[in-house]
Structure formats: structure tokens, C-alpha cells
Image (tube, rainbow, N blue to C red):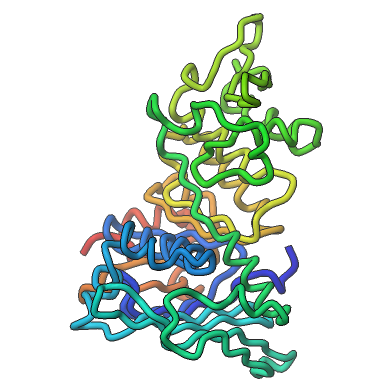
Length: 361
């Protein structure tokens, strides 16, 4: 993707365990840290923004975040407001939300910004003048700046393929017409693959899956009654067809991740929370290679607990997350602190021996 379509910098104050954040972002961002450090809170902030832009903020805060008080850092007695400042190459978005007496949020301010070539703020479109329950970002239709920001944030969905139980959505039938974008839990995987089956990207997806699962031949697409479709595949050397229930958990997750990262038209941002779950070390190597390649066209933010996966990336890709004084601290590595270690260790190994933070104190 073009550099104008990348989130360059994020300032965030008062969200969950994030008391304050001032973090530059690159095309590929790998969050490492101990359990409870705040990695998932950062990933879920983008889901918060996704709901905000879709005008589902009130429902999401009440039903998923248990109210504004639980959303703010240590509650409203400690944190008076939630402050958001997103900076793209030339565009920006700022919002301040304050909690209400009925435990939800209202907008104090909401602005779309434009910066010129000298990095100076050139335009400020006030979207909200205070008191609104939902974002006004869609209502400012005459602004191309606002429209671009809306499209970006609408695309910012965390992908989560962890559920591979018998009742997982990826294993059930889904409408053949729901095939434009791969959904966040892979529920329309079969329909999406059916839609791109004639592309070169589809052939690459199949070949990559075969590297991890040599028994896999290809997907089988059969439309069921009411124009529904489910994930089916053919085993090499057999005429029998199988469905997703006959795949191991790791193989099914790898199929979802491969489809996400190799699809013909990538979303503007891909958010992944511990994508390595259940994967063989060789599959992690392939996953990292796909992530690096995809980051040339889109932006990736992913958290991991895996030393093996972290070892596949450069120190420039890493964001270390620590819990310090009851707050999540996010920082990028500096070359001076890491160069000497890289003479003998990979980045994940340095993390494992606690030479750069990101481990429990």
C-alpha cells in the first residue's frame, strides 16, 4: 500500500491498562511482552475504534467492555477522559471521550486533521462539538480527509482464528454471497476462497498450505441448499472429500492465516493476537515470511508469546511491552541497546534471556 495509507504514530491516554502511550509505528510491528503486560489491550483498541466508526460505540462499551469505568485506566476516579490521537502521513484523527453518569461515553471533541508537506497542521475539520453519543465521522461526507480515515478505521479489525472447537464458525456452513472480505474469525473462509479460486493468489495459498500439510491436495467447493458453502478439501492420493472437522487445530489456523496474508486485496491494516497458537515451528517460519511480505503492501500489528516466531523478525520490527507501576509501557528498541547482543543471538533469544525487557519482573 502507499505510505499515505499507513498509521505513522499513535498517542493514547487512559485506555484499559494504557495510562499513556506515544508510539511510532512502522509497516510491521511485533508486540512482545509477558502475560498481562497490555499487548491484547493495544490490539483491542483498534476494535474499539472500529466500533466507534461504525456507530456502535455505546453498544460495544456496555456489552463488551462492561462500561466506561472499566474501559478507562483504573476507572474514572483515576482517569477523567479517554484521549485518542492517530497520525497518518498527511491525515490525522483526534477524539476525547468523557464518561457519563450512566457509565458510557460521550464525545468532548472529535476532529479530522490534514498536514502539509512540511508536517504542519493545515486543516482541522471539527466532526463533533461535544455531547454526541456516537462518532460524527460518517456524517462529514464533504471531506475527503474524513472519508479516508473512515475507510481505514472500518478496515481495522483484529483477526482471531483461535476457536477450532466443534462449534467453531469456520467449520459451519456460510452464505456463498458473503465473500468480499475474510471475516475476523474466518467464518466465511469457504465462501471467500470460492470467490478468489481463479486468482494466482489462490494457487499460492494452496501451495503454501501444502508445505505445512503435505497430505492436502486442494479445496473442494460444493454449494449446498440455500446457497450455503462449507470448508471441504481433498486428500492427496484419495478420491474422498473431507471437511474442516478432519483438520488438526494448527492446520486449520494456518489455512486461515495463509488466506488472510496472501489474499489478492489486503485490508489497510491486519491485527493479530498471538497468531502462533498451535503452529509447528516450521509453520511459524512460513507465517513470519508471509507477514513480512504482506507488510510491503499493508500494515501489520501482531502480538506474540513465541520466542520462535519473534526470532523470525528484525529488531526494528519489535515493540517491547512492559507492565511498570501498574501501567502498560510500549517502546521500540534502540540500535545501541541491541547491537552487541545480535552478534550471538536472534531477537527472540535476547527476549528469552531477559536482556531487553518484555518479561515478568
